Image (tube, rainbow, N blue to C red; front, side):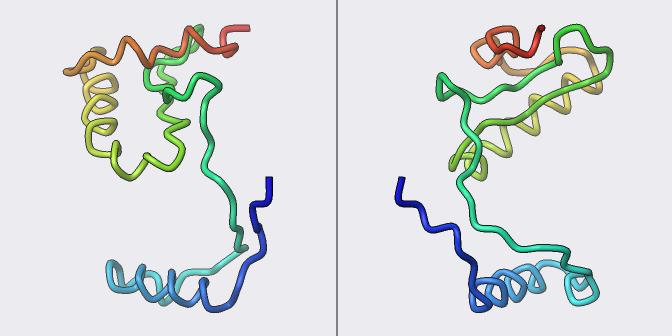
Length: 104
């Protein structure tokens, strides 16, 4: 409620200049759109991290809401272990996808 989804040229330029400081590819990138939105969050507030039920070689790391940037390193560590070795090196059982309606 009350979230302003409008975009501004100033915000776009700020983000592009910050991105350009990280990679020279930003200068030649094609921008297809600009949005302002909230980050996705799961119904119970815990992200989904793990292997997708009933799918082979499909993994999910989503629903971190505004905390995604903070949890990116540990999520990446867990996902790398899952993908490379079939098992996360850290306990991610509380983030299991089975608790979602993704199994239908």
